[in-house]
Length: 321
DNA sequence: AATCAGCTCAACCGCCTACTT
DNA sequence: GAAGTAGGCGGTTGAGCTGAT
Image (cartoon, chains in turn yellow, orange, green):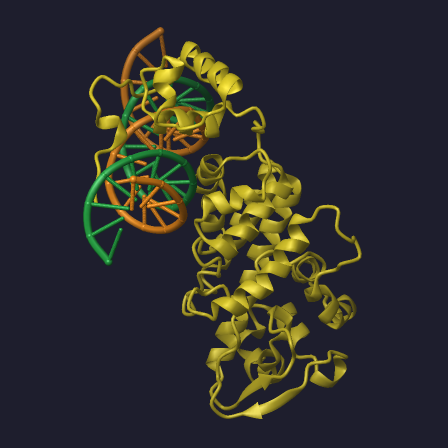
């Protein structure tokens, strides 16, 4: 059931619009509305196809279009919505008044996507691109990317988010390496939220792992060698024979149950997109894992690691479900 | 000042879906 | 139910801009 593209009709102009053409289109739509886009060009005296007119109007001439740079909130909203909807640009645009799907798509491809890649985050799944074997070797790049983003200082709040993501990813990657290295026992958490600091297997196994890393990351092993009893975390840990990998830091995999994903993410979106929402709606990440932050405050001597973990604890987790 | 490379974004292309005949 | 049409959407392109050399 094919049909010829409307612009195949001979003699129709293509390419950039002139101010005169813009004015004709604006005048016509103001007077008559767009009606049938196919019929519009003739009525408006334009030598364009209807499709071209529609695009010009919706992406550029519409009076309610917001121009200029994206705000930090808008960027965060785009990231959140993209994690839920994927490349459904028109749906994403529906949550951003005044922004067009085309504009959002361009912004994603030229700015956000690049930024995520730079931070080692897969822009498609928004999961950390974890290479378990080389993660430690990649630490300098991860941190450099995060710090570089801070230096750019283009958009402070977004940069902070980006930095925290990179740092959290770094920690998560290390956790995964540590966890995977330990084959003697494995653990499963019954905690309702599996996230960075809900990695109970990490905590439990550290005494045997920590010595391997002690020389290189003394302060980290200092932290993680804390006896589990010293934590007031509600996490309950049980022994488990077959599970030797920790839960993923994020669960944005398209393979997962879409319904569950949608339900969870809907809440997430609401929290991020409703800028006037209750300010007391703290991230569950922070709430659930405050004990970690407390312990770290008390015990961590290395200010660098302390800073990383503090930020991770205190800032909303942008991509977590 | 000239050239080049990389980036941005408006516009196009082709496919898909909903609706009509 | 099949065919035709229009609008919408996402992917891609390329002209123009900008900064580096």
